[in-house]
Length: 456
View 1 (cartoon, helix red, strand yellow):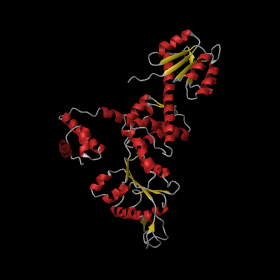
View 2 (view 1 turned 90 degrees about the vertical axis):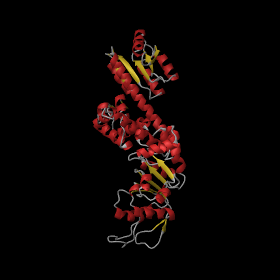
View 3 (view 1 turned 135 degrees about the horizontal axis):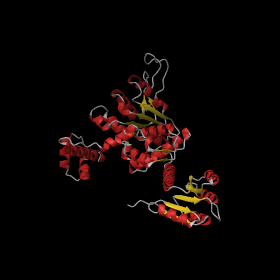
View 4 (view 1 turned 180 degrees about the vertical axis):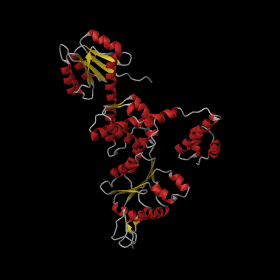
């Protein structure tokens, strides 16, 4: 499908200048001409333009007056002012009134095109910001859940429908995909939003202290227990407890947690009675929890108790259409925090970021944006701001094929294995559905799964 050409309004009272602009811009842009200020004001009140190039000195209505009118009509429309070399003062005044930039007659064609490109890139970022704000408004309470891809929209729907219940939720996904944000969002959208929201990182608490942290202990329950300690579950009573890295929980603790889920009560270490609790449990893990169950590293009964509402967060590399939205969000965030004014990301830089696999996911992207904005004094993010390891990874990916002996068959087998794995993941392990997806017979699929050692 043909890409839409940006629509540019040229305002100049000289026929020769309008002809010059037409010759320069006709290939890459849709150019509309206005021969004076009054015509420009009329057109901008009736039509939308991606950019306006406006001469300052005109006989009826000056360029500065037209600029004021344009900004009152739509403050997001960028305007490039054109001035003669001796008219620098009005040009500076135009910047104060909101013009994007100015160029001086006679100008170099490359300078004009460069200024136009910068203005259009800035407008693209502004539009992404507007979309992002609208999306966040529409998803009130969704916090930093950002995206318009099909995968993230499905997660929005699960959160909307699941937040109103008290069912347990199990959030899975790689590190840095936003599991904590999803958990907090569910709590904020639930009927428990005015009650406690307690976070427990199961991997960060030493095994010998985990039971005490979760369920509490009585004074004298063990050496060093000088006073009663209230556990996380009691603190969360009436609200929500988020158990992050649940896959790292030791098996003995899993048994005790299962009893809490089943009975709705806890017992402090050294205590003599059960304490009723009303807590909604949200758990999260970055490990393959189904594999852990099969390998007897995670209790199957606890898994089914936690996995009533499953939410799987896709890695950033599988939702790259959301990358510009994340960039826009983080640029805006760190511009405010660091008092900077980054307005756009160049095409070269964006291409490098899109070609990277982001093993650290959204968290890695945010760290990169923060680092770049902290260290640069420029008003944009360029390819030279992108770390060499990201650029080198992109290059090595393009050079991954070698011509060693047997490389063709090896490449074919690798591709087939990846295809089979993806089909099984997409079908949730259903062999019939996976075979249909791949267009092969189920018995053929089973045979190939055995050959490659892929567990169904």
